[in-house]
Figure 1 (cartoon, rainbow, N blue to C red):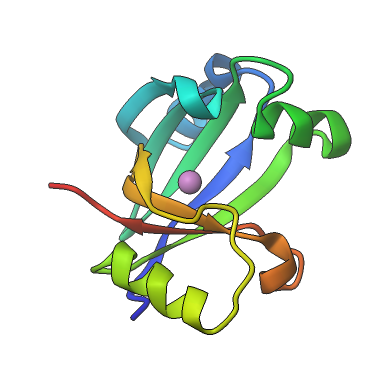
Figure 2: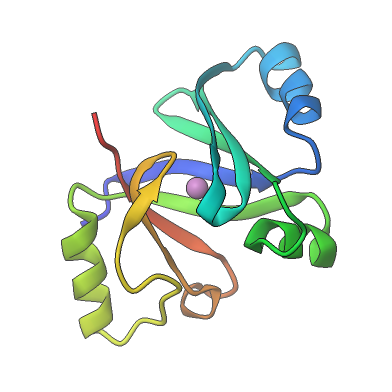
Length: 133
Ligand code: CO
């Protein structure tokens, strides 16, 4: 079951620079910020109503976000759907033969997360997340 759009991920060259727009100009609150080494990103989540904006700066050029920036430049990177049980959701999609990036959920800034392959979603990278309170 998919509940809602949890966040929209945006790839940026500089998190600090992006925050001057999203936090300072638009006035959105940063509610989480962290460096996730295994994904090679420095990320911030900003609250926007019931959803969030996730800003992603690569910590190294060969990370997934680093390669994305190299290919496409800054902009929309992924959409994240919230689900109450990311394990069950991922298993169900696996059963249906959906192409995946992650075979099992892992810890991310938004909670327990996993990515589906863009091929499965008409060219859009989709993340599933179950927030951890
Ligand atoms: Co995300």
